Length: 88
Image (cartoon, rainbow, N blue to C red):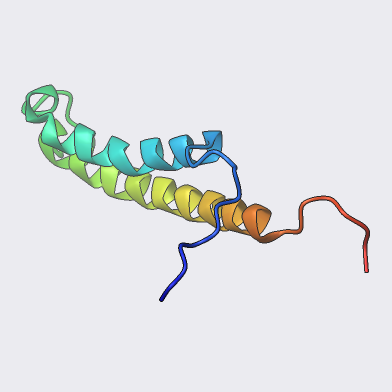
């Protein structure tokens, strides 16, 4: 028979994980809320707002995904690190 995985007693929802979630959900919300950017003004170097807003979110989404990944790596390292105890 298999045994249930051990739980560490730490909370599953940490502040870092909340920030990770916000970083990953923000681009979806921004792009799904079409009414906020379905217009032509203000134009940027002759490009209507509708297009440059979406292209700007490509860059913002990349940065937010990178931040989320780095936070996830840091969170995983912290969870794997020995908690207290003497150094060997």
